[in-house]
Amino acid sequence: MPMIDEGFLIGEALVGEEPEIAHIDLIIGSKKEAVGTAFACSIAQPRQGHTPILGVIRPNLPTKPTTLIVPKVSIRNLADAEKMFGPAQSAVAKAIADAVEEGVIPKAEVEELAVIVSVFIHPRGRDYQRIYRYNYAATKLALSRAIQKFPEIDKVLEEKDKSIHAMIGFKMNNLKKPPYLEVALDIPDWRRVEGIIRALPRSDAIIIEAGTPLIKRYGVEVVQKIHQLRPETVVFADLKTLDTGNLEARMAGDATADVAGFSGLAPIGTMEKFIEECKKVGTLSLMDTLNVPDPVEVLRKLKVKPDIVELHRAIDVELYQNRGQEQESEWGNIGEVREVCGNDVLVAVAGGIRLKKVKKALKAGADIIVVGRAITAAKDVTGAARGFLQQMSVEDVDQFRVMTDF
Amino acid sequence: MVKLDEEEDEVNEEESVFHKKLKIKLKEKGKEGRLILLKDYLDYLIRENRTIPPDFPTFVREIMGLDERGGFIHIRIWHENSELVDFAKIRGYEHKIDAYD
Image 1 (cartoon, each protein chain N blue to C red):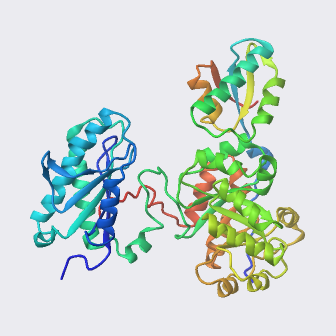
Image 2 (cartoon, chains in turn brown, red; image 1 turned 90 degrees about the vertical axis):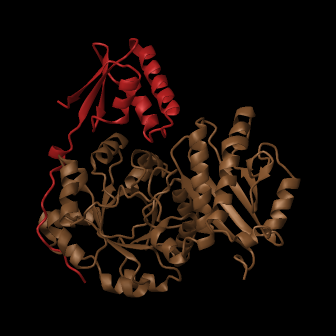
Image 3 (tube, rainbow over the protein chains, first blue to last red; image 1 turned 180 degrees about the vertical axis):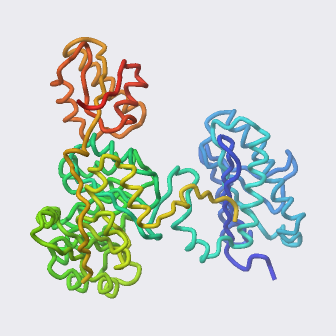
């Protein structure tokens, strides 16, 4: 039985350090099928700067299975060409031949198979030793991964929300590990907001809310500036959208918001468009229940459910209550929200939360504790935020998680 | 319904919201010095690949309207590592940071 029944296998690997870092994308399959066709088309139709070349161990000694090397970065001059024709070409060819010797590719099948390897060499890479070694290792790793069909889908699903892409420089946080502390920046003064952001502890458990007054003063672009200061932090654009749901969700997504919020008072169609647009642009949607008489009833009517439901008490109501004219704070029924939206929904509670209330809110089932002035108006912003994180028993263990080989 | 009705620990906003002053010396006196500062700041933001601060239009008005004290203008900031301090350091402006009086 042949190693590859039909179609082709795909492998990828990143090895080494910049600027010589090697990134290999590879496909291996039968010459009689798609890989063979791609191989022949590619070699017959070279493109400027991306001329495919055969993998040769040395001139006049092509490797087996026959291998085509395609440069990912445009070759602009002779220096670039020499790196590809010299160390990279030889490294890839040697790695393929060694894989045959080691039994990774069955020797009996080498004439049936073809390999296409896409090679990245940074124009600033100069060290031929490193280019050779990194490309050799990356090709071997990509090939063995292709043959093992790495990764299994369960591994992808497990890792997708906690991995860091080495070339991004920050981690996408999909809010899969509650509880979170959302710091609401309702102050419409950028320099003060900047000061607060710089003073906040760097924790994966913190969400920064660009509050409605802040957005109204500066526009949703303020989210981008917050991300410049804290690229790793989830930023929530509290738009409280009431109309043009898809348009406003798209604006938030374009401004790099990780979460965008609409009002639960909006027409059902607006809310659904908002949620659907958020899904398209990769932003989480949040329904704000401020002044909504029966949030659960609204949620029931929605064909698509938001990712987060914020049970919200208004700032004006808080002030009223703080004057002693009302004694109770009501956040709504978290259990019922989950019943309607499913267990994956995150529930945030907002409005006048102080340290003493945190444990009670968590016990009630809250995933996100929204805190405003108790942190932003504190003399010691860092200490106040740490106090809340401690009350939430949040440990920050994941921030420097680096994924290497599995 | 979940009721969270514990006593609030009050935050006295007037007391707690304090800020600092970035005292920055203009490279020339008067309007010219302010224009140079603003041009320098914009140049710094663009060359350092920083997003333009959302309050930039307000900031321009503020800088043009601030009093000059012994060649310095006093800008309100809330953190000693703010972008403006970074700018003053990198672009060689004589500066100091004081608590607000």
